[in-house]
Image (cartoon, rainbow over all chains, first blue to last red):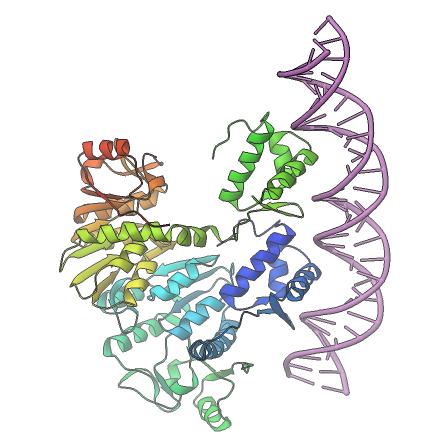
Length: 264
Length: 264
DNA sequence: TATAAACATGCATAAACATGCATTGCAAAT
DNA sequence: ATTTGCAATGCATGTTTATGCATGTTTATA
């Protein structure tokens, strides 16, 4: 990334960098920017004020958001979806601590998590999804381990014996298996037998398991069981999930984390 | 980098040097330039003022930035020569036959090749680049095998012992090793020692080797040799390459394929 | 409602900048 | 040989810009 010299950047260069980051990441946080550029938060705020005055971004409490929201009906829906997933991802990454080893599965939600992970945090990410790997390559300060194997087109990641064998040689702190379906009573489910085996291997290779699920995954089941609810330690759900469902999940012993509400 | 005479340079030479540095580094700092040329900052500022007046750069507090939407070095490279790379890729895929197994390395040129491969052609693609894998996942009718291992951030692909071991278990028909530098006399070269080893393994695992090189890769050398010219069977080059260079390459025994001219 | 974080504002300081002027080196004109 | 003209430079001057800190205010969250 364009990060020629994160430290000691020219003022204008900084603003340009902020704009790029707004485009690619969808938001910036004042504190993080101050840390990145080694300047005071005041300087960052002044930058954001200028950019906002030029109509290049929208200032919000804590940082700034892009203003380019030129959205066609189709893109808008995709964006809304993206917004919700990003909110989930932001909440999910609060469970990540410095110098941990993460095991990240395929899926658009997990891609959002990869994009939301803090840079230069000493994180090691093991993944079988080219998608996730690609996102992290474009960012900085990650140790990336790619799990190889035959790629299932419909899933978009390496599954099968080879991949499972590679995963068995890994020990991770945190695991993010993509959820196909999750139910307070019956646990985590998948639609594909091979995929279920792989997710199972991921969970077994990790200390803790975090399931991040959009609303439509909740309360439904699929064909192949991945894990019981007792093997899932954290569950991150959307803000809009109703109280009854939340209660049932909590009762099943998992720690439930509720994402922030999305503006849209 | 062309450093004709860092010290004691003529004013025009200095300005030329500044422009080059703007292209390659994305910015210049007045203080640094003054130090480099052993002139006062005033002289440097005058240079920058002139260049800016000619529309060749944008002056900012502390130095100057390139005019053409400064982007991330990586992203820049990815987008810059898109047209030319697509022309190369179109020519390269004419070498591919039905039901073959291809071994594709990392790099923007190889990504273009992946995008140009014919769908539902019975092709099996083995790659160590998440980038290439992702492109093929979004398309149809490919058997994809992902090579795992530790990912080198600067290269954007899995290299190292694990990846080489996996490649050794493969037999491919055609191999597309990314070219860092290629020379009629000295063969194929790379800038990274590990990367060179991996490319070497790829070539050894393949029946035929196809090198696809943009113009700037020709006639130059790098630090680590990947293969001699006798191990390269096909070379795909741009239309604009001059007759003399083409002759030298043909004389070295490789079959030279010339891409169509690009409109731009 | 209490609290902490994020924010705005004014001010002091240092760096970067513009401008005018004197000096230097060199080539063409005298 | 001397002078003139010109471009390039460095220095001194005053101005602008960027920044950090201290102050008081607003905002978000428990």
